[in-house]
Length: 118
Length: 515
Image 1 (cartoon, rainbow over the protein chains, first blue to last red):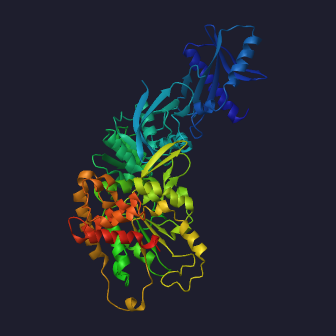
Image 2 (image 1 turned 135 degrees about the horizontal axis):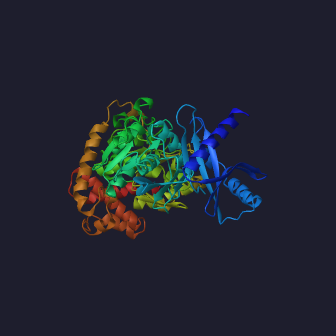
Image 3 (image 1 turned 180 degrees about the vertical axis):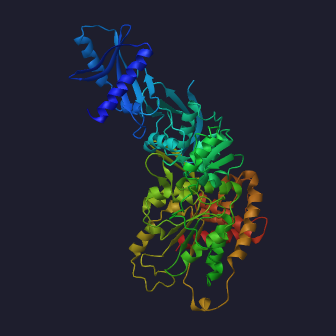
């Protein structure tokens, strides 16, 4: 695995433990379909939560949160709907959350969680 | 509530509107939105100020920043809002303290330095009028902004200094990292408004009649036309006119400086006290002389010559439309320009001075034996100056070539200083007499004043009345002759014009149009 992929995986793991500590019920991770990939999936009541995680090791290329806003949000909704279909589950809605992880590998990683970003 | 509020000024022509700048921080993905009809350069502020704030040590919030410029329906343009937007965005997150009703007028560079903008003087004037007293501008604009009385102006070289002045955490703002040498106003390229090195009237040999006419024109702010062959010294005479005009009053200097501030950043540190002198080339377009351009129209040479001299050399060579467009400002002293994005009105109380040749070949003066123009050519040449335009020109004189006797005479003529003293005295007399009607010069004196308050006895005005009766003179011309007569009286130190003054004034007007 390339360094870029390793950083991403580590960031997703950090995000997952952060979200679970925050009380979110995670049900899947790194689920792929033809429409895209879901980093983390969680269920909050009757809502499916699709969580996009962006990890960066420094601020040299901007805030990780800026990396998420640059991508279109349909990329998260459609795989969410596919995921629900694949698991034969019905939800009243799909919510997209964003988690930015800043981890320079030395100190405590900084994690920033935004709910319902779209 | 994560909301910050500051004030800025949007200029529409010379009129400034106070703009309330609100910034809201939304808890969602990073974005930066500017609402309230920004133009392209104002929209670019988003990227400009994010970088500038980060480089000055206080990065903007990493959430969605929504900036609203109120009133939202007014078109806003230019980069002068940058500082107000940064301060509103940082006040919203509490990084700086609330700014009260301070008005911020400056552009920011990516390095965090504040850059001067054009039009600061009228902007600050508008702010004071709207009841704001505290202003923050770029250091390079400080001299100009501070000209406005009652304005408490602070000039800063960089964003970091502004942050500290508004209570930012000094440990975050790293002053040494930011360049501190302030951005100064660039030297003005200033092509149209050449302030000629003061040239002296003493350089002019002979031409006593023309010298006298120039003196009258200067004393009463009358419009003037000089007709003469090439080499007679028409241009020389006009170029010396600024030197004998009196200094502008405080009020006039403010108006003139404000107009000149629109076009460029003023590098001067004082009001423009000398009357402006504009001499646009005869190929100039209507828009360049009257004012124009897309969006909000900008002032042209006629407005830049406000309270000064607009000199049209080789007047018949100008496009007909340009000359005709000058008719309204000649009467009203104001230009109102309508464009899609709004209406701007600029003052244009200039003194029109035209110089022209007697015919296309230029030799038809005196006996005119060398002239090769046909009567038709000559007629067509003069027809380019329409009668309505000429009707507004008070002094129309023929300038002949200087004879060898006058040229080699050797006697130095009167210097500008001597003439200027007489002109200043005449102006002072006018101001005193006309103060109760709100006019400054005889040229500005309304017709109603001539017919009522300052009506001359019938015996004195007999010659003009007769000229009007036999239709050599229009009603407007009649009044204009009387205005010149008053100037003659002021120059002579009399309390009112004599029969002789009126006759001289009439003669000065009719010299050319009857030839």
